[in-house]
Amino acid sequence: MYGVPEVKENAVPIPVWLGKCGLKIDGRIPESVENILLDSVRPVLPNLFVQPIAIADCNAKQILVVHHPGQLQ
Image 1 (cartoon, rainbow, N blue to C red):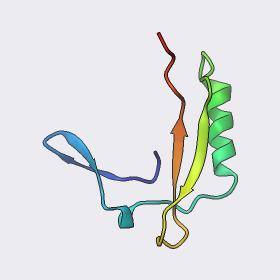
Image 2 (image 1 turned 30 degrees about the vertical axis):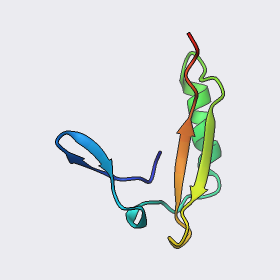
Image 3 (image 1 turned 180 degrees about the horizontal axis):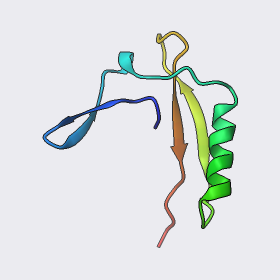
Image 4 (image 1 turned 60 degrees about the vertical axis):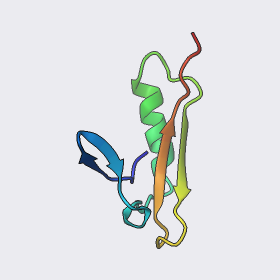
């Protein structure tokens, strides 16, 4: 997730309060991130998912979720 800052407590990353999270994401960014990953990562990431998610009550800020499920062994 992009747009979720962390602080370290005892070497463990802890996300900050949701009100301090988020980015103003241009509409082209998710597609650009997806294209970069598809063009540059080998083997190709199966079922890649890049999606901006709105944060309620945060002045149009979003979190950019980049996910690809792990392969079953």
